[in-house]
Amino acid sequence: MSLKAKVISGTKWVVFANIFRQVLSLVSLTVYARLLSPDDFGIFAVLMIFVGFLEMFSDMGTSAVIIQKKDPSHELLSSIFYFNLMVGVGLFFVLLLISYPVASFFSMPEISILLPLLSINFIITSFGIVQKANYEKYLDFKHITIFQTVSAVGSLAVGISAAFYGLGVYSLVLQTLTLSLILIVLIWKYSKWRPLVHFSWSDIMSIWKYTMNLSMFNFVNYFTGNADNFLIGKFLGSYSLGIYSLAYKIMLYPILNVSQVLLRILFPAFAKIQNDKNKFRQMYLRIIFAIALISFPTMIGLIVTAETLVPVVFGDKWHGLDIIIMILAPVGMLRSIVTTTGSVFMAVGATDKLFKIGTISAVVTVTFFAIGIPFGVEGVALSFLISNLLLLYPVLKISWELIELSVKRGLLELFPVFIISSIMGVLVYGIGKGCDMLYITSIFKLIIMIISGIGIYYVLITHRYGNLRMIISELKK
Image (cartoon, rainbow, N blue to C red; front, side):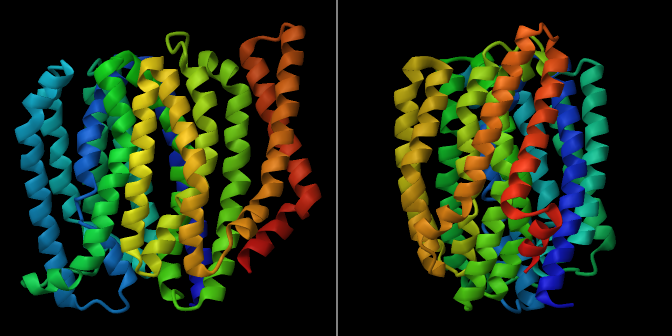
C-alpha cells in the first residue's frame, strides 16, 4: 500500500473512532457535570497538574524517536521497552513521595490518597509504549483506534457507575486507570512485537539528543499549559479552578480531536518525506486547512451560543462558565493551528529549535498568567488569549521556515475559512436574539442556533469551495 493510501486509510479509521469517542466524551462530560460538583473537578484538575507534569517524562520522547528513525533495530526497541518500565516505576514513587506535601499545600486532604492511586497509571502505560509507537510508525491505525475505542467505552462505564454511586472525584481516577489497563491488555494481546532479553545503555544514549530536547520541550510546554491551573488553584480556590478547567476542556476539543488526531497520522507520514520539502509543504497546507474547516466554526459557534449552552447542558451551578468559554474559544482556534508546528519540528529532527521556542513561549505565557491573577479567573483567561496572539507570528515563522512556507501564504490559506466562520457566528447570534424576542425556551433556542449554524456554514463553505465531495477530493491530493 502506498504512503498516500495508508494516510487516507489511517485518517478514516482515526476520524471514525474519534467521532465515536467524542460522542462518549460529550455524554460523560454532561453526566459528570450533573453528578459531580465543581469542587470535584477542581480537585481532579490539581491532581492532573502533577500527573500530567510527570506524564511527559513517561516515555522520555522514545515514542517519537521510534517513529522518526527509519529502521530501529529489535535490540534498540527492547532497550527502549525496559527503559520505559524503569521510568514508569520511578514516576510512581515520585508521586507517592510528594502526595502529602501537595495535599497540604493546596489544603485538599483527599489528594494524599488520590495522587498515589492515580500514579499507578505510569506503571500500566509503560508496558505498551513501544508497541503503540510501532503501530503508529507503520500507519496501522485500524488496530490502535479500535483498541482505544473499546478502552474508552469500558472506562466510561466504570467511571459513570462510580459517580452514580457517590464516589465523587474517585470516579474520575477509576476511569483513568481503567482506560489505560484495557488499552494495554488489548495491545499485548494483538501486537506481534515482543521485547528481547536485552538492555543496553549505549542504545539509549544513541537516541538521547533527540529525546532529551523533545522531553525538555514537553517540560516547558507542560509548565506553560498548567501554570494557570496552579495559580488559580492556589490563589482563587477549587471552585474557580473547576469552572476554568471545564471551559479549558471544552476549548481543547478541536485541538485534541481534530489537530492532534490528524497529526497522529501525519507525523509518521511527515517523517517519511522529511527530505522532500515541496511534498511536505503541500501536505501540511492541506492539513491545516482541514483543521480550520472544523475548529474555526466550532469555536466561533461556542462564542455565540455559550450564554445559552451552559445553563442548558451543565446546569445553573456553573455560573460564570459561559464568560470563560467566550474568552478561551479564540485560543482554541489559534492553538488548533499552532499545535501542528510540533510535528514539523519533530519530523525534520529539529527538536532543539522546538525546545527553544517552547522556552520563550513559556516565559511569555506565565508572565501574562501572573498579571491576570489579581483580576480573577476571567483575568487569567484573558491573559491566556493575549499571550497566544502575541506568540502566533514568531512560532509560525520559525517552524514554517523549516518547510519553506511563509507565514503570509499559510495564513492566506486559512483566511477565507475564518471569514466564513465569522459570518456564520454573526448570523447565529442574530438568530439567538430573535429567539429571545419570541420567548422561545432555552433548550429550543440552543437547538435552533446549532442547526442554523451548521446550515449557514455548509451553504457558505460550499459556495466558496464547492460541494463537500470536491473539498474532500482536494484534501486527498
